[in-house]
Image (cartoon, rainbow, N blue to C red; front, side):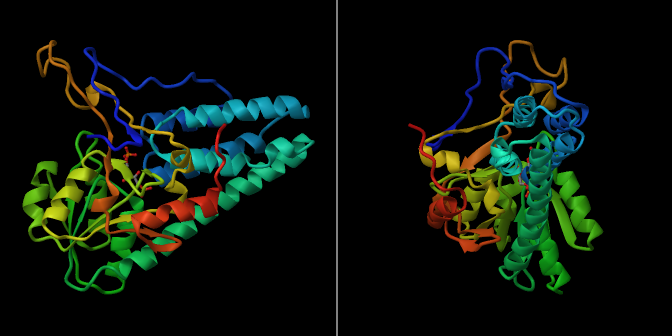
Length: 332
Ligand code: RUB
């Protein structure tokens, strides 16, 4: 059953493609970035947040015109364009909001421009710094000789694993293929390049390999106020297998992947992508439906800890950090 604060888009009788909100062309950089996020040239929750923030910084930098009202309208369209590119990772929303914060109070285009450029730089810097902190903290959870499993391609989980290896710990990693996009191939390449003993497994081998795994490290697209994790499809299967095998399950994430919207009851939309990512024309009879959800939900009870730049958190303490970081703007 889906968690109460998660919406799964159910397969319809026809092929269902996630309905992207209205797309407003603004300028080259914003449009190009949105397109790259949409087609997954830029992917991963942290990267899309930084790319979206940078695109808005570039938008402000290259903006021609002095009419502040017009600027605000164009900025809103630019932000909407970025936000429409992928629906699930709240990092994108939090990154965009951080970048444009305060711009509506500025009275000149020059002042708003400066503010946005500064916000964008600050967001990207703090995002990269958070990643370093998470790597340092998370590496302490890895012991010499550990066998680790990871899923998909999370720069945060990989950062933790690489840091432990850099510290001289002798580790082995199993990385899932992550059908249909096979982001696992990126992961094994990155780990092998770092010199780590790495084995690629198909997604359905998770339960078998869990028997000799010591710890699981994954990333996050969104974390809800209940401490539930939304991440690449299949994450919840790793969590269930880990629970059954008494293997600790860690999520490595910056706190800007916490969704303040979920405090107010908003649901996390689960993106569904085109069937062509799963099958090619002619592979299956035309009457067969294909359902391709790309993220899933792991209930809080299966997560041992969130490893964040604020420290190691229990799922139950996510709410407090959310309030601290984002406040609570209840919509009336
Ligand atoms: C990637 C994915 C990653 C998170 C976290 O999905 O689910 O685990 O985004 O990544 P996709 P990171 O390939 O569909 O974007 O830790 O790099 O932010």
